[in-house]
Image 1: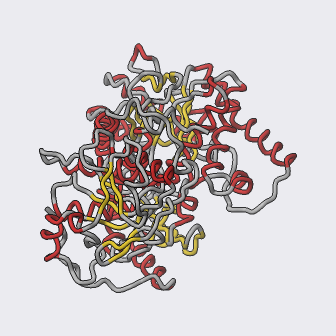
Image 2: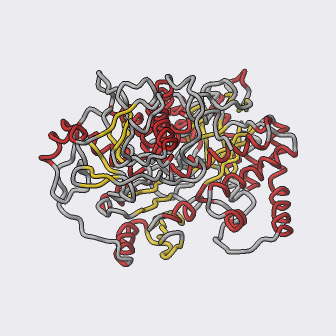
Amino acid sequence: MKYCLSPWSFSRRPTREVTVGDTARGGVIIGGHHPVVRQSMLTCDTMDTAACVQQTLDLVAVGCQIVRITAPTVKDAANLENVVRELRARGCLVPIVADIHFKPEAAMEAVKWVEKVRVNPGNYADKKKFAVKEYDDASYAAELARVEEAFTPLVIEARRLGRALRIGTNHGSLSDRIMNRYGDSPLGMVESALEFARICRKNDFHNFVFSMKSSNPKVMIECYRLLSARLEQEGVDWNYPLHLGVTEAGEGEDGRIKSAIGIGSLLSDGIGDTIRVSLTEDSPREIAVCNDLLGEIPALVRSASGIADHPLPWDPFNYKRRDAAEVELGVVRAGGEQTVRVVVTRAVNDSVAPRIAAKADVRPEGIYEDLTVLEVDPSVPLTLEEVHCEKQLITVRDGVPLPPVTAFRLLAAELQRLGRRNPILLKDCLTVPTVPLRAEIALLRAAINLGALLADGVGDAILVRGEPGAGASLRLAFNILQAAGCRSFKTDYVACPSCGRTLFNLQTVTARIKARTDHLKGVKIAIMGCIVNGPGEMADADFGYVGGAPNKINLYVGKKAVKFNIPEDEAVDRLVDLIREHGKWVAPEGVAAPLVG
C-alpha cells in the first residue's frame, strides 16, 4: 500500500474539496488546491456566550480560520445559536464547529446552528467500559446496524442544511467493539472512521473530513499513513481531506516538539489539509505555532523533487527500529540495542561541559569532530568499496542539496540495497544557518526533520546544529528523543488543551503537578480535564489525574480509576501518595543550573 504519492519527492496528496460554511459569506474550503487551514478550540464554558464570542474574536484576530466549541449537552448545543448570532452581528464570519461526544441528540441540535459538527466514532453510538467480549460476524453486523441507526439522522440533516462533518477518531476513545476486534491499534482507529464514512456515502453525503488523533506522535503518524493508504484502496472518489493533530500534546517545548513531529512529518509527505496544534496554553498561542509550522514546510521540502522511487527501507505502517550494528561512540555505544544517542559539536561540548552535574541525564554522548564518521552523498549510488565496514557510523555529507528527511531516507535505502547495517547519525540540517534562527523555528525544524526519521525507525544518534545556543541545542536533542518515544530521561506528561468540558484549570494544575513530579525520570503522568479521552489516552500512562466532577478529581493507575471524588485542593498530594504507593516515587535531588544559551 502507498500512503503518499512519494516519500522521496514532495507532492501534496490530492483530495476533493470540503466546504465549511458559505464561501461567499466567510466560509472555508478544505482540501483541493487550497492552502492548509488553521484551527483551534475555545476553552470556556459553552453556556457563557460572552466568553465564547470574545475567545472566538481573539482567535480570528491571530489568523484562526475555523473555531471549534464543545457541546457536551443539548443545552450547550442550543446555546450555539446565541454564540453564532452574536458573532455574526459583530461581523465575524468564521465557521464554527460543534465538538460532540456521547450525545447524538446534542449533535442534532448543534447542526442547526453551526457550519460543521465533529463526531467521535468511539463514543457517538458506542460506550467505552473496557469490556471484553467476543463478536461473531452476526453480532458485529448487528452492532453496526445500531451505529448506522444512531448516526444516519445527523448525516441526513447535515446534507439538508449544507453542513460539514468531521469523523474524528481518537486513540484514547476507541469503542469496546472496535477494541475487541482490532485492538488498541491504528487499524482499529482507521476501521472505526471508515464505518462512519460508509454511512455518509450510503446517504450520498461527501462533505466530510477525517482525523486520527493520538497523544503519541508515532501512533498518530502510523494512523494517518494507514488511513491515506486505505482511502486510496477504496477508490479514487474516497479522496477526502485530512485534519491533522497530536492530541493532548501538553505545553511549552514538549507540546511544540510533539506537534511538530506528528503534524510536520505528515505535511512534509504531502498529507494534511487542515491542522490544529493542541497545547495546554491559551488558544491563540496554538495559531502562532500553526503559522510557524506551515511556514517551514515549503523550505523543508523545496529541493525534494525529481527523485526516483526506491524500495522503502522501513514499514510505514508498523514502527520498527532499523537493525544496525553496534559501534563505539566515545564513552558509550550506539546502534544495535543501544538507545538513540546525542552527539554534539566540540564547541557545544566545551560550552556545556563545565555546567553539567555529575549525575545529569542530559549530557553529550559523543563529540562530532572526534568520531570516525563516514560522510556520504546518498543521491549518488553507494558502493561496497565506499561502505567497506558496517561497524562504522555513517551520515549524510553537509551541503547535499536535499531535504534532511529525504537524504537520510535515501541513505537508509542505499544501505539496505548494499546489505550494510551501519548505524546512522541523523542531522537536523545539512547546511548550518549562517544567520541564527529564532528559537521557535530552530525547534520546529529539528523536531520535524529528526522526528520524522525517528518515527520511520531510522537513526542511532542525532546531532542538532540549527539551534545556536549550546545548552539549548543539547536540551532540544534530548527533548526530541523523549517526544519521539526513543528514550526517557524525565517525567513524561500527557496533558489535554482544555475546552468547555474541562472541570479544572488545566494550566494551573499542570504547573502544580509538574512542580511536584518533574524529577521522576521514566514516569508518565496524564492530566485530563474530563473523561472523554482520559481513560483511553492513559492506557500507556503510569498515573492519571482526571476531572470527574466540578472540583472533584479521580486518580488512575494506567486506565483504571482507583481514587474517586478527591477534593481538588487535596488531589495533587494524593497523586504523589499514589505514585509513592506504587514504588515510583524518588525524592528530588538538588537541581543544577539550567542549560541555556
